Length: 298
Image (cartoon, rainbow, N blue to C red; front, side, top):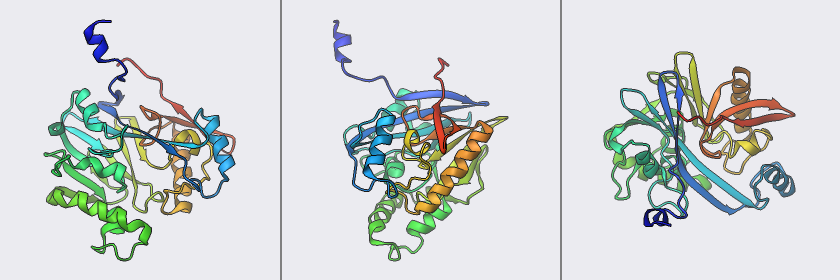
């Protein structure tokens, strides 16, 4: 093997994938994969055996939790809008790849004119800052759900939050502090930017927003974390993952958005799904089946 071939041995192809949404171009961006032991009580209302069987039915190890991370960029002609930012620099091995894949797609940090945040968990906001603590996207406005802001940061010090959630509030405060007046809050149901609408997706966190991107008659709905993995949680929409802050509401949100997607044949983009994390759902049995969109050459 030649020297050039040897230097790439063992490396994967860059993790970006483009698809059209009307006159817009969407770019799925892979932030990586983390595999860990499946934590006890991962699903609150299902037995470990049931969860293991569901994982095995999707081709995954019964006792492992595989977390995949994927953001979505939209090239608008007026600039690039990034939806969620991944874990950022310093992430665990296997993750924190969004910046490199953005560059591989031909897009630099300065091309990003707006960042829309779905919710405030670290894997969605960590990439807002570069490794030196400065804004990773120097020319971007950062748009966040008003209800999410109020839940995590509304009282300033997070004193009213349960102890289990205070660390996340502290981390959120640290991420947002350097952004200053770059931040703008949006209401549920609002048009955030032309063609970008906030859709109530609360439950996983109280103020989480799904983001609908529309152009002409075409649309995709970035559904953030309505499922931990649609291969499992679309088939079992009633399951409550340990990461959901409001479990009952998370189930209701999941059913509402998956019902709409199935009825309207609406293309979905997931934060946690096998890359490129975009496809459709159809009703099947007591739940739904996730059908990945077929890849195209361009």
